[in-house]
Image (tube, rainbow over all chains, first blue to last red; front, side, top):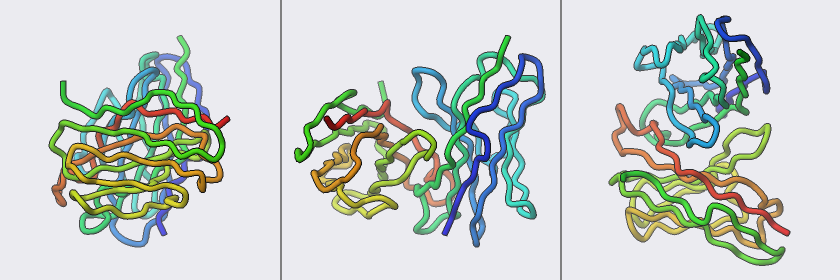
Amino acid sequence: AQRVTQPEKLLSVFKGAPVELKCNYSYSGSPELFWYVQYSRQRLQLLLRHISRESIKGFTADLNKGETSFHLKKPFAQEEDSAMYYCALSGAGGTSYGKLTFGQGTILTVHP
Amino acid sequence: DGGITQSPKYLFRKEGQNVTLSCEQNLNHDAMYWYRQDPGQGLRLIYYSQIVNDFQKGDIAEGYSVSREKKESFPLTVTSAQKNPTAFYLCASSMREFVSGANVLTFGAGSRLTVL
């Protein structure tokens, strides 16, 4: 069975401070990991995926298979980063495609 | 304007009634999905369809039914058998590419169902 855990329901930081949203997963095979974000009054949308190895809006996430983690990081948080963030996992290819397992979500609030 | 349209945005239902939520996409995506979003529980997969006239149960399919008669449409019926139907329902779609795009979901704006 696959599982995604986001231990923090709420996370508050001040503008300019570093931020890290934690995500741990459980999966026996080779996972594909994602971060999705939902800004206020907007649709849930993809932020980044581990296979792209991109930095999106200053955010990065590294897949650590040893620790089974995929934490989302940004060195200097901005007020516009305030949103709900979901970590998600899928088995790579085959019959698993599209079947994402989501974590419980973390509400990030960046204070001015 | 390409995307996914869910309707209605808000819906109220009496206990014992079935209700159908609409989901239409014009992205030419092969796969479509229904997720349920509850506070503190994240998103849970109800049903998904990889191709027209075919669909599979997700993790919490009991009390729900779907159909996929057209590529563009994937309606969800919440039946009276669903014990706790009050929730926010999200429809999504994705490309069929197994290698790169299949797991990148495009979401609708959602439908909030309240059972009175």
